[in-house]
Image (tube, rainbow, N blue to C red; front, side, top):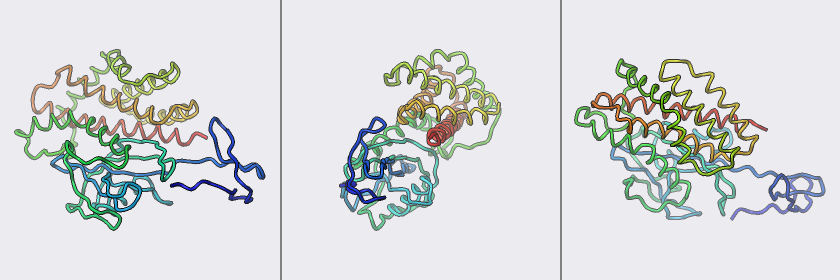
Length: 334
């Protein structure tokens, strides 16, 4: 159980609780100091093998002793959250990895640790063996359709988001294995640009341009209900993201657009829009593109499907960059 603050760390006087800035906070009446609690940064990893199984570790210590979870742990002073994720993966499961992208950011209030900000990454496994570390009872892969209950609700949320992101990609990968047997995961898709790539990219860009109202309507139907102000702000992010993707697909520079997302992130923090709502809006925007590609039925041959998978992977990476700049602006607003 997280210990409560009893005495002021500056003057030693007893702590009281006051309602400050729309929240109850510890306060020292003697030296007029307010203690603002920031969530502790936690990093977790989703590692999937070629059989589409997820790597889990069995906890050795409380909280949630003996339960299974994603490799997870606190970021330490002097390291980035990405470095913390890879360190925890190595310490808990003996696996060397490479960060692919952010999957989810969740803020939770835990009875044991207090307020936490849990950032979950997709990580590509680089070393072949798995071995439980000193602070884990076991570490092994489980089928995505049959894994044990997870200790952290945020792990379950991130894993389901990961599955939702890749289920259509996996379905298409399965459909082209007969003509491209060396393609086993989305990481195997080559990165070179071809005429086929440019053709499909142009088709998707035209689809975004001509069907923008349909994109907006689908996004609106899936986004949770917000007040008019927050809805308008989140819709502007979705539309700006589509504009950025369309520019990239047609060969234009988008660096200026990425920088603008930092400014948007600062405004979102100023307007007190929750970070989880921003990330949800971005995830639904990204999802809308791939759904529209499938419903339009513009892909007919295995080569077209293969090329579209490459483009979709790039789009995912672009949305990761958008998320990065939004969070960067959000965190830098004072």
